[in-house]
Length: 140
Image (cartoon, rainbow, N blue to C red):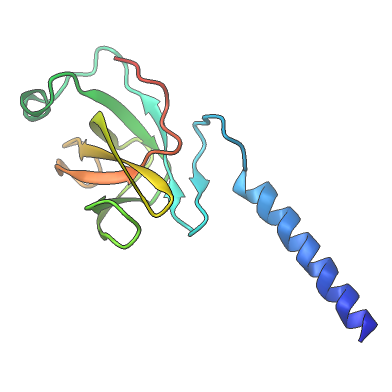
């Protein structure tokens, strides 16, 4: 019985140690994708170059839109926000989203309201939400 308890404690220790290493737990922004507590791929957003044109439909909707590349594969775009909300599509590295930084909090996360760019994997899809935890600095 003692050997089993030692084995279980050792496995628990290894699991906790590996979970912390692979989760990349820190609160600083990184362009690397991360996995959330529930297995959701968290985006790292990279600012677009200043000369990237704002699409007319985005310019008509947002007064001062900020554009970002998604840096992660399989990022869930949901409507409305929250982990139980329907996944409308998935965003991948290099996909572009536009936002005015409207946020909401649900399920322990801050969600940001975005429209996807016509050149993204999903095409131009308005009014979807992604987790904001790892947004880069505002650039425009």
